[in-house]
Length: 437
Ligand code: UD1
Ligand code: CA
Image 1: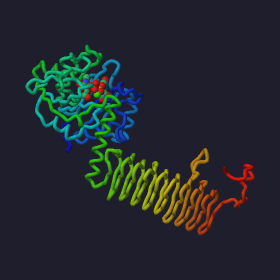
Image 2 (image 1 turned 60 degrees about the vertical axis):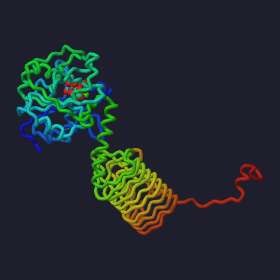
Image 3 (image 1 turned 180 degrees about the horizontal axis):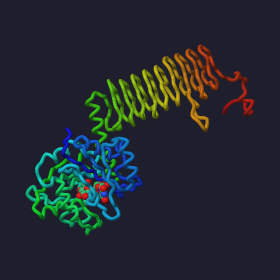
Image 4 (image 1 turned 90 degrees about the vertical axis):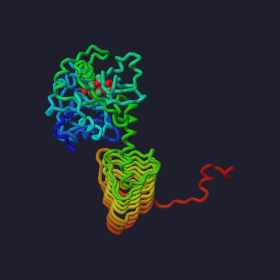
């Protein structure tokens, strides 16, 4: 439920050097969506005052997030040159409410239920702590008698501090006045020459403020700094997505070999076999997707697909059977059978039509893409090409091995074959041999 007296700010201004990429870190995707999308989505469940600090590639990040969230979020720009660091990120922030939740933008696995806990406790500062042997990349938290004393960044830590397994998870709940009092006091005399938000903790502690740790699970609080973290985060999110759909009644074989993006949806009884990948805003309804098929942003209803089929974006299939090595792109097929080895692009194909092996729509002339329209009950023989734009009306038969270059009218037989040639013993004459040795 929305807690209307909470402000949330998400830090997303850094480049993310450890990603070794020109793309800003928070725009790297897991399960089909940019990392930052996930934490904003969770934050909006709790607050009507959600701000995002941007800096590196600020415009790109704003444009992308506006596609998802319209004007429900506010962007602030950080002066990265003069005030770098997670403390610098909050410099010109003016929260609407007295309670402020700060979270790093590279925590795509966090859930609103985790965030709610920070708001429910009375303390001057509440901060997230992970207790994990996988310490790499995290600041170490010094805790005594359930109270936090300070956070020391990995790059500034002594060997003794590095041994601590209490890690800073990167989420804090402050009162507005604590931020106003301590942010101006931050200094950048550390290994990275940055203004660390984490130093607010030790400054507040010196003034006897109460700082309470909340212990979180690494699967939810994981920070993503490099491509290894990204891969691990994608695995965790991918499992969540699959578990969600399994509980909703989707059957999956060998779930560890299946990849399903966050925006995919299922309805009715569906079976997904091993090695299947389903991307984008695909919608699968009462269908069976057989092993090693790839489905991209397509709608599949009452159909069976694969094994080893490839549906590219904007394919819409109803009551259709698609077999192995069939590629379909931007096509609508209803009540169609295409069992083997075909390319069907920019097409509309109607009920009862049977497509033989090796059928190809020649939809591209080197400059433009053209449409293919095939009516009802058409029988297309194997190894047939149709050169689009083209229209094949209902109830036609096309003989195997034909190249169709002009429309075919209702009820017609069409075939293009050269006259059959046979010459007895031609092989032996040609090679000047009597028989094969
Ligand atoms: C930070 C914490 C560390 C903690 C870890 C948890 C600090 C100083 N360190 O380290 O204690 O264990 O998170 O994951 O806070 N950002 C800005 N502006 C900047 C720098 C960073 O907005 O000038 C943003 C980044 O885009 C990122 C987030 O802040 O989303 C965290 O920055 P990052 O560089 O990943 O911090 P860590 O080194 O992981
Ligand atoms: Ca980080």
